[in-house]
Length: 371
Image (cartoon, rainbow, N blue to C red):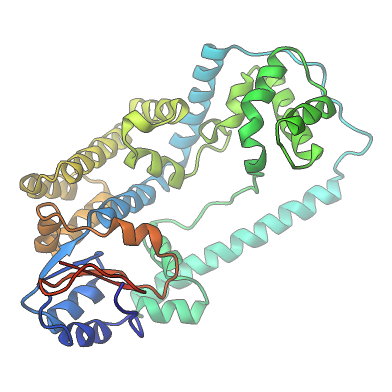
C-alpha cells in the first residue's frame, strides 16, 4: 500500500491520482464515489471492478431477497431436520430434569417486553433510513445523523420490509469443536453433563460445564421431539430457520465446499418455492460467469435478471449496467484486489489497486500499486 487517503471522497481520490500521472489501470469496488474520482484524476486509466466485490454484492442482493422469504426458510429448516433425522436416526433419552425453579410468568413477560423494545428500535431505524434516503440525504449524512455504520444503512436500504423480531440465540461456538464427540457419547447412552464435561476437558476444552449442560438440554429436547441429536449442531435446522445471511453465504459458496446440511437446505428451498429456485439459478449463473471470466455472457445475464420479477436481483443487475465497462474489464483483465478486501478491516482504508508501468510492487496503508 502506497498511501492512505485523508477521507472518503471523489476529490481525495482525484487529487491523489493527479499526482501520479503514469497510472494506467485502477482496480476498485463498485462505489460510484471511486468511479467519479478516477474519472477526474486519471481519465486515461482503465477502471476495473474487482471480482471479490462482484460476488459480495451478489450475496447482498440474495440476502435482501431472502429477507422476504421467512416462511420458506422455516419450512426448509423443518424438512432439513427431518432428512437429517432419517439419515442418522433419533435417540431416546431419560426424562428432562425441570429443576426446582421455573421461569415465572412475570419474568417471561419482562423478557418479551425487552424483545419488543429491541425490535421497535430496529423498525424505527429502518423507517428513518428509508425516509432520509427518499428525501435525498446522502448515506454519509444518514450515518452521522442516526449514529450507525454505512453497512447498516446499505443493508436496510436493500430491504423491502422492516426487520422481523428475533429471539436471542446462544451461539455455542466455544463448544462447537466438541459437539461431534458429545453427540457420539450421547448415542452411546452417556447423558450426564458433568461426566461429559470432564471428558472433553481432558481433550482440551477450557470452558464452563454450564455450556455443556445447556447443549445436553438441547439434545434432550430434540429427543423428546423425535429429532436426531445431529440436528442441534446445524443452523439450517433451527425452528426459526437459518438467517438470510447464512443462506446467502451458502449460495455463493462452491457446491463442492458446502456442508451436507447446508446443501440439504438449498435443495429443500429450491424444491419448495419456484421463485427461490429461479433466484438460485440466476445467482449460480452469475457466479459461473465471474469464476470462468466470461464477460460475453454478462449482457444476457443482466437482461434475464432485470426481467425475471425478482426485485433484489433486478436492482443488482441495473447497478451492473451502470458500471458495465469496468465490470467487463474485471471479467477480462487479471487485476483484482481480493487480498486487499480480506486484509483491510478498518473503514479508514479505502482500497484501490493502481497500475503504474514505471513502479514496482509496494504496499503501505491503503493504495496498491503494481507493475
